[in-house]
Length: 166
Image (cartoon, rainbow, N blue to C red; front, top):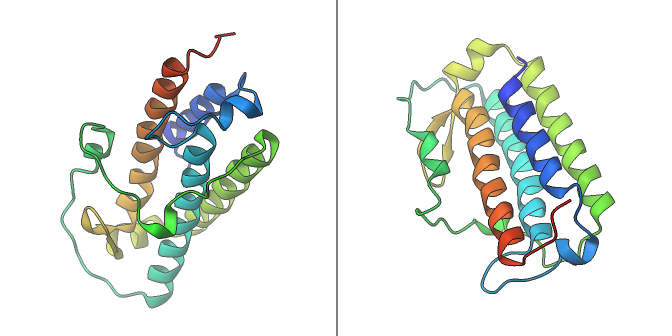
C-alpha cells in the first residue's frame, strides 16, 4: 500500500526542518517541546505503531471495530499528554541524526505495511490510548494525521521563536 498522502506529509515535515540549525532545533519556548523533541516523539510514534502492528498481526485476533473519528487528531485545541513510551528525550538533538532516524523509522513501518495483506489491516485491531480500539488500517491512517498535527506545532514554534525564513 503506497500512501501518497503520508509521503507528502513526511516531505512537508522535512521541509520544515530544512533550514533550521541545531541550535534552533533545541530552543525551548516554555512550556513547549523543542522542535527536536517533537521529531523525537514522531520517531517514537512510528516505532510504537510498528510494534503495535507486529503484535496484532502475530496475535491474529480478529475483532471488528467501528471506524473512529481519527481526524480529530488534527484539532490542536484538544490537548493530549503523550504517554511515557512516546514522550521525547530531552535532547539536545543533532539534525542529521534526527533526519536519519525519521527516515529509518518511516521506512521500517512502511515496509511492514507494504508486506501486510490490506484485508488483515481492516480485520485486526489494537487498543489506542485516546481512540479506544482501532483497526490496524486506522492506526496507519492516524500516523499521518498525527504527523500533520505536529507539523503545525513546529510551524508555531518557528514563528514564536521568530526564526529567519529562507
